[in-house]
Image (cartoon, rainbow, N blue to C red):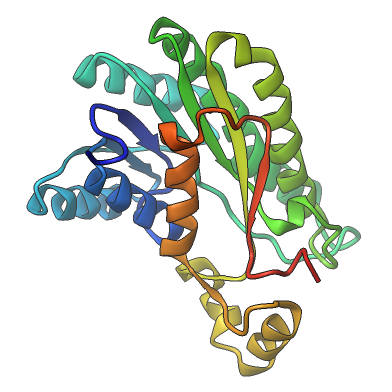
Length: 250
């Protein structure tokens, strides 16, 4: 049996990169997928790909920083499928600027998209998971949420916040059989990282930081997320799982 047979999953930021791979893999493993992204055309294309492979999914345009839009997404999921088992808070942005160079507006934007969105998603999903007698939430952080990265204060703070918010929710809702874990990707080849990965000097710096001699693939992050979303990890909650090729080990 597929790992997510009978499950209903929301995946944010599903239009590209890691979110895309997560949505495709979840559908392959039997989940009914609600694919959301601020780029509606991108998630519509993902849904067509899932359906052409025999899976089931719907696409919803979604600004994850908006509480009203979270209500729309969750209500749409329950209206379509009647329940909700899995939430993957994948959507996020990068911000490569030092603390002194970051404006308040930039800081707020990073926090709203990377951290407040995770709070909003859990706030509106958890009541339905309680009704469903359990669920699994996977929040995508970063190795920047584990170590003090240089030159990206707002991004590092937001991803550290995701890590600790996940732990707090794991403690609060374990009694409801709701598991909450965070995944911490390292240097992963995605559209968001393309300008760095395609820069030879930056690529060599990346490789100097890893134990495995390559950057990661978005599909490799999706496999880790699948494990935490599925019943295969039924006694895991409140953990942080690095998918980083050994960066944090070094």
